[in-house]
Amino acid sequence: MTNPWLTSNPFMSMWLSACNQMMGAARGLAMAEFQRQTAAMQAEFEKQVVDFWTGGWLRPQQKARRR
Image 1 (cartoon, rainbow, N blue to C red):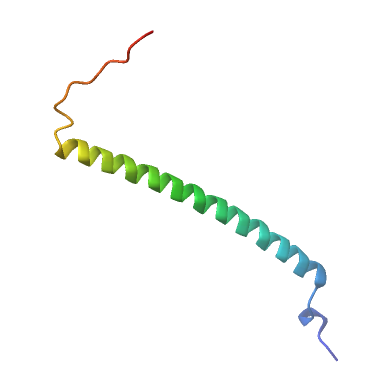
Image 2: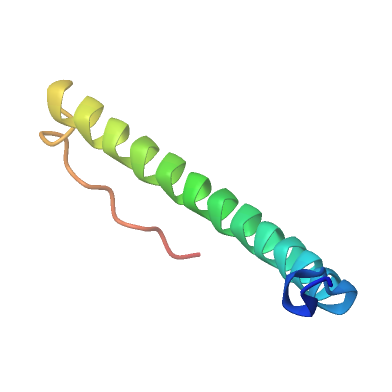
């Protein structure tokens, strides 16, 4: 006699498949945002390093002009 607890449940399988799809999409969106933020932070860091080593901190700050 087959144990009913060990047989596959089609509804559970469909539910887990849908859950896996949603988690995959959420993971993709989170990773994309993480990469965007990482690239922005790295670009800002590189800008600050170049400004520091090229004497960018010595030049006077220009004030925003009003029209």
